[in-house]
Image (cartoon, rainbow, N blue to C red; front, side, top):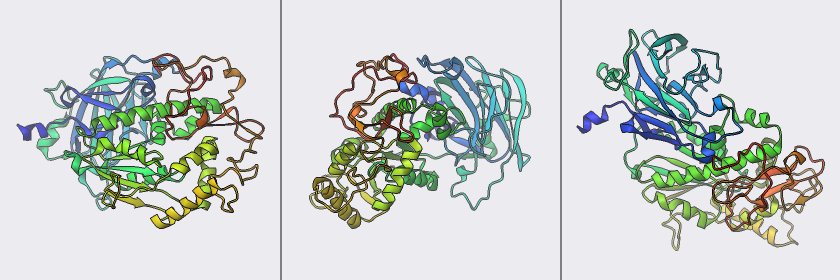
Length: 524
């Protein structure tokens, strides 16, 4: 019975986004949608891919989740994208790479971010069958039908893969793939499961008996998994390192939890985050996007810790985590995992370069006093086997400066901030920079204690998040964690943005500072 269960084709809990729900004996899939999560896309693949043959599977849209998204067109609130992708592709980006193909409810076919019209729209109650022909390599093909009506070939593509490039068979196989936004679907992989196969195609489950099936990644025991915690100041290079590490280790199927990941999941379908940011135009609207992203990240981190023991995965937690108490709080639910700290501590010159790059990307950096408070609380992590250690790490990696260099520089930076007569200049200090540096108090003439919204936002209503009426949905993102600039500084217009750090002791913000991008009511 156990072997029979393992041979079933179902959605793979080891190959899905943290915001994707798998239920119904592995055949029901849905995306999280409460509050800010309604703005996110979440993806999942099946546990069996194919390397040859002609096979098909079905996907029925069984429900639309009720969401409040007043700032989003109704037709963009509940969407399903269904298709296939190669096993080494990112699970949250169906249709955005050359080996990823998806038919979307908007009536478009996605591949490599291109989206020609195809097949017409589909939605609640519709059944889509995806048929894949790998017999005629190298020009394989993918086609779809809607409610029994064939829609024709969507695309021919090269399915050949250099075997020397891949370390695992599943990396080059093609798997059924879903990308959902506020939708619940039911998968059909066999005739017994409700599938009506396309003419000339076998049910996907038949690939098991034909010898054309490849199993996807599996994680059975938390003791075989790891959680990597990034440690470093803002703009030190943590996210860049983490994203590179994920790409270099596809077999780990890391769940990367950080602000950049959330912004990617909130993308307009098929658009890069940078394009989305540019489309927002107004920095105050960008600020509201960052508020939403921070709130969503908190929710996903809570979900990850709650599921750590029952749904083993490999995680990378991408926040600052400079405070030892914060590290302990986050790691306590991962006690069965191997726990690794990754310290990113670059040289002062490199920090300045990265800070300026962050300013160019996001239009803001954050106030120096908050950065200096983080600096004062920064404790380099140690492993649990070090004498007198009260930390939980099995391993500590220093990926730029080594421990001795990092310790020496950190002490110098702390001393500089506490000694007004110090000759050392910390890259996070605002005392010694001129007007051209974004952290300087002279930059934009002065720093204000609270955000100054643009005139069109001054009388806008506050966000009601179901607990208290407040313009800021998290205690970690309050006015004293905001850099507000006025004057003629380039790129500064009202409030400049938020730091990705937690500060639960910060005071609540006055209501009334709210952008139209942030929808009112409990649907936030």
